[in-house]
Length: 175
Image 1 (cartoon, rainbow, N blue to C red):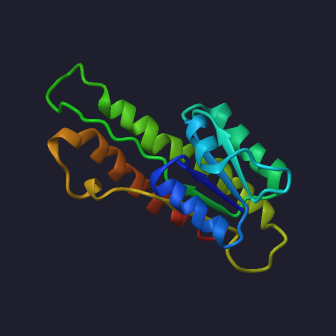
Image 2 (cartoon, rainbow, N blue to C red):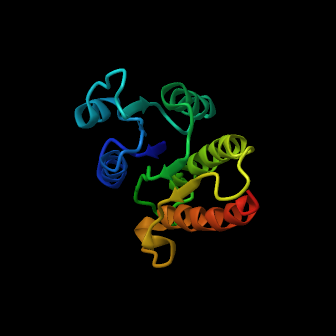
Image 3 (tube, rainbow, N blue to C red):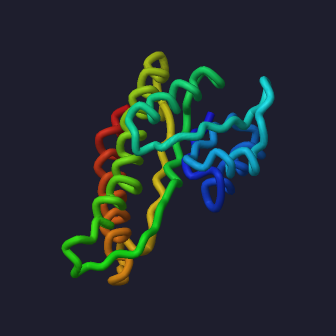
């Protein structure tokens, strides 16, 4: 069972469809409910693809996404943080809030979702004697390494996401 964020379009949608095509259960998450319905359709009771619409910047929404996934499929084995927002920034404007917006949308959402899903994966794997208990994939951007001044806020969030991924990989390695 995979949870894929940013699944109403683009890379997130392509990843969700690929998992479904290979036989996985997929919970497609996005704040664009209309886009989810257009791309995925209204799921039937036995459908392997479901959708969850909500603003994942909200902690309660993240908890509800995990609950909806467990209710639908009984487990969560894969998390793909594919939701990405890009906005231009003005690096020399002290009134520009783009860094805060990009950190909240592109870093903190992935961090909070990873925390709650990783804890669930560890719990699911308590009876396993060996092997990974799940996989978490975070999509970043080349702007984490090659920035453009007008995308400075996005670059900062992308670099933060990569560091978060490395740090959590070390934290989760024993599990």
